Image (cartoon, rainbow, N blue to C red; front, side):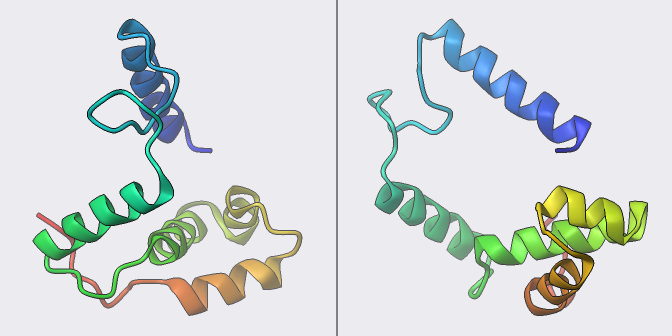
Length: 104
């Protein structure tokens, strides 16, 4: 986990604790969000951003591509939790979103 990601999660958790929330992702009634609810919110956001075919694994693949570029394949492998480098390379090739334009 990168320091920036850890800081973002810690901030979200501290905000949740201040409001006595047990979960990082909650619905408007402070209850744990369901998988269906999360996927629905993600789909609506994707549509608003004009990203028709964006999936979680694409984001993970892009993250591992950036990690490889910045810290090498070993760093990407560690971040991805893969047992070997070939697994990481295959994931990067199959899931990377290099064709997508950055969201402004």
